[in-house]
Length: 292
Length: 276
Image (cartoon, rainbow over all chains, first blue to last red; front, side):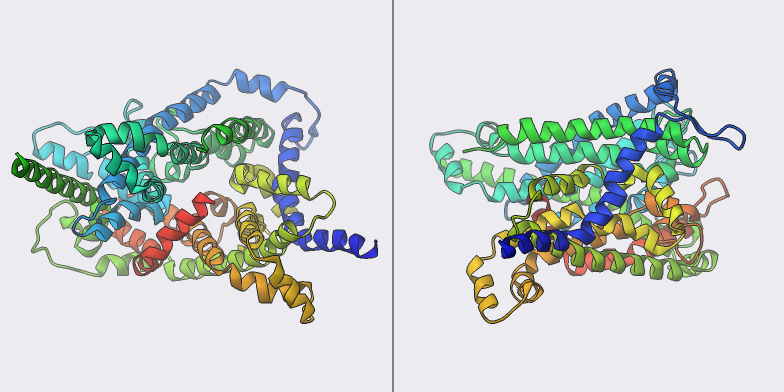
């Protein structure tokens, strides 16, 4: 009895240091965000007070909120399917013995280890009007220049291209790992049956890669919510919020306009979105993707 | 018949090799361009003359405009502090989850996993308030603190510890090892591949992290490389691309060199950490 009790205590003692930090920086702030979102902004004469759903009503009436939410959705739609398709192509290309395979694989993967802020610095020069690389090449070929990051119509696509460049190689390594686990007999069997390579890919390989695709998909969606570093260098969310994303808007609201309670309400939306993702992953995908 | 099929196979194979190389060239070209701009005088930034003179002036200029060595030191301190704390805290917690059926361990584990979704970046507002309360704003410790208890690390190490044979622990206990002795002599050595994978992922993540350090820091003594670089190239102020490229390369060089040297370990670590 005594030893059993002491095992409980020992277990908790081992967990304690990590638990304290996790509570302090994950659980407590999550709860505090929800509570703060229901209070008003305090000033020197009028202290912060409970206002219920007022911040949320303001949020629903805020056109910028809807704008950034739509941008997040477009950003995810514009980057994720393309990145995944490219990742599969890259993995297929280097999954055979070709001359210089290690070099090619490294070329695909290198953008992954660069910080987003450095990537944005490099790409900023490509997109800059007139003196930028793209415009210089375009004008030398007789086309007119374009302010890629200054035009609301092109700013989000321009950022998407950069993001795809950054992420495709990262997703590639998961596909490579998965492809190496596909038994070679399957390919031989399908060749004996006279199946073409495209048919083999579509009917055999792609379904077997499904767990990887879903894993990558979840990670890509999460990343699309969390990754806003490049906006600091490229656009600051502009022009006219055309490239603004939810997390960047939260940052602006809290640290530029000092509207912390409104920022808390926005954070709650982000938390809910991430929570939905977690539930999807846990209840639906985990059951469906495992091949038995 | 047979002959022509081999020919078409050879043809497709070389076509695919060509495509692989073409895509690879396209993929490295932004980085190659950054090197070009950084090592040539400003007037050659878009003038690709192979005979253009090489220069280190851009690096000298970048270093004179901002204290990048200091930023690099800050990043180094930050990354080592975080990793050291993570290794200790996650090892202890993972051991508890792997080998102790303590009361409430399932709920506790679920609560740990919450951090996989809700990473500290999301809670910037409240976490900043917490840091301010403890006077940790603008300290390297303050940047690192929210990341030190890592759900990801706990999860990975728990998996590794669970696959360690229990008999080894029992044998060590018979030899007179206490709890921490068992952990240190049996579990930690056997989980070395997991530590390596987690360590590399953690280092690259925190070397590259930007948003939270940007919020926490406001002085040269604490600012990591990413933040230093982020505030360096304010595009409004008549920029010199060559100098920004040089600054960018200075910031990414340590990690890039490490990656090129230990490419295999890096790729395998990312793969290993992702698949678990």
